[in-house]
Amino acid sequence: AQSVTQLDSHVSVSEGTPVLLRCNYSSSYSPSLFWYVQHPNKGLQLLLKYTSAATLVKGINGFEAEFKKSETSFHLTKPSAHMSDAAEYFCALRDDKIIFGKGTRLHILP
Amino acid sequence: GAGVSQSPSNKVTEKGKDVELRCDPISGHTALYWYRQSLGQGLEFLIYFQGNSAPDKSGLPSDRFSAERTGGSVSTLTIQRTQQEDSAVYLCASSLPGRGYGYTFGSGTRLTVV
Image (cartoon, rainbow over all chains, first blue to last red; front, side, top):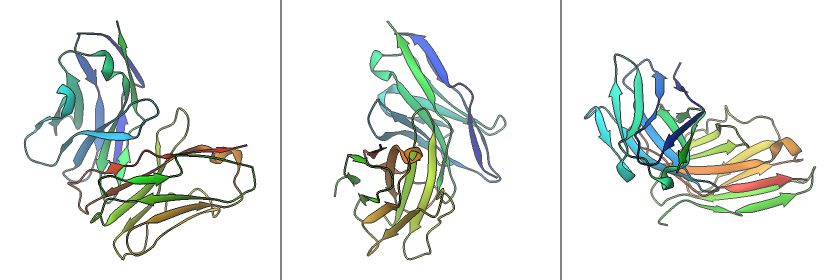
């Protein structure tokens, strides 16, 4: 069965330091993987997606993610956090429908 | 339209009443999905429509929940005899078919059952 596990429910980083949000997946075939962001009281916005092309995927707002098949991971990174990055982030895998992880809330410390 | 439109944005209803939530997907998106997001919880899949195929209703939590999609476009999610545990944000998304496509989400309907 397909599944997505986000390893941290909360992550706190200082402004200007790197961000790492971890995601592992389980899939019986080559998956399509996504990261979404949800700011408070807003809908979900697609950050980036992996669909079996380049393993390093660049998204909006300086985020990127690397698909590692050997580790079944799709971690989200950003070199330097900004206060506006504070939000909830969802890793997701698509079969006929998208399966979401439980989310990671990113806190940015001034 | 340019995006996925949901209405109403907020709904307060009394326990036991029926509610209808509407979703207007992006034109040309044949796939439409409903998810529920409860406070502090993740995204719970409810139902999925793809073109003229029978919908995947496997996520509906009880028979009080139903959804239809008319003319392959607008969808309505109906909750009968609402309960307090139905309070949540109901999100609609649409997509082109195929695993390579992400969803475009609407802003959601915040349902509060009092």
